[in-house]
Image 1 (cartoon, rainbow, N blue to C red):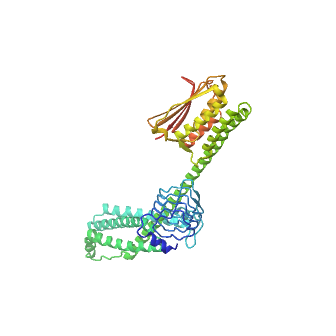
Image 2 (image 1 turned 45 degrees about the vertical axis):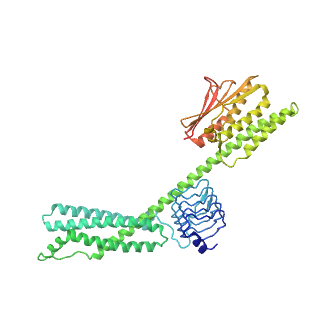
Image 3 (image 1 turned 90 degrees about the vertical axis):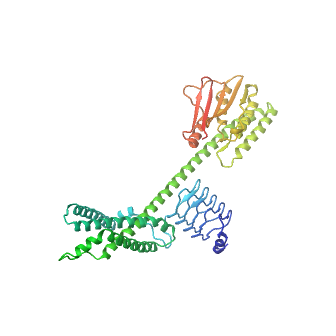
Length: 477
């Protein structure tokens, strides 16, 4: 597909569908691709410079080396995409989703683009930075001094004509400054969205400033200054030694272009900070995911190891029990290996897995172990909870409770929901928890997992009174 064919295809289409396409090195620059679906596509080194990608779906796409310079990526979905080596200089990333995406934004100079210079880096440059800083300081002080001088003249002078002139001059300068800033502020964001060179932007601001300041000067003159100027011109010996109007116009133009530069650079700094925040947030999510995977990898072999030992001990003593235990264990394997990368599963699936695990242990312990699991309502059966949340708690109850009883071991699992809090209680009738609790790896892993996934919105409590139980509470709101 050529660029021209793509432009024809997008004409009149609300949402472009390009899912799973090979579009490596394609030129999308300047196109309006709002809401486009590029998920699962190969977009390596594609050029999106200046393109509009509001709300576009770029998830699971290969985007390494792509150029998003000055692109609008607001509310776009780039989750699970390879963004290594991308250029996002000047891109709008507000609201963009970048979950679990590998980011490594290029900072090198692009062909034909000048490297961005911020005010901070400019003022910190030796020589020129010092000169520019001194010049700005002098202009600010000179400007405030002029304001103080003319304000004092208005108050102290007894010549009403001169007071009228000073009021005109002060009002004119205040209006010109405010009008110039409002003009540049109003169009600066629009100019940033245009794929124009910096000289074209400043030229347009210069022309608009000339028009606006000229109109403001005439209006202010006929409103406040005309009478004073005419009265002074009629005075004997009055000489108009004022500077040419072009000098004042030059000051307005310098101010307008300076404001445009500062606004543009300010947005550049904000965008760079946003990029860094996205990268830090993404790194934190990747770190959390790695920690959860590490916990999952440790939990699974833990109970499988115990079950395999039990099977080994039963093979010669009771082959039927060994066979039953092996079938239950294969079901556990299917649950363990059937994960799709998510760390959550439905409450119903978790209960089914725990029931299978308890059936494995029932074969091992025989009459020494009985268990009950409270029925759950359909409303909460599909509630998503962390995978392998209950099993380590149950395993801990068997290892530190039931295994230490000669007979009559009981495990009771109660699940309730109230006011947005899901409560999971695992009770066993083994020895009480010691005062200095070394609960074993299972409970520590549960606490670590809940800390990573819920923060303060989950608790794990161990009780001996009124009965021995582990209580897990999750805030589902």
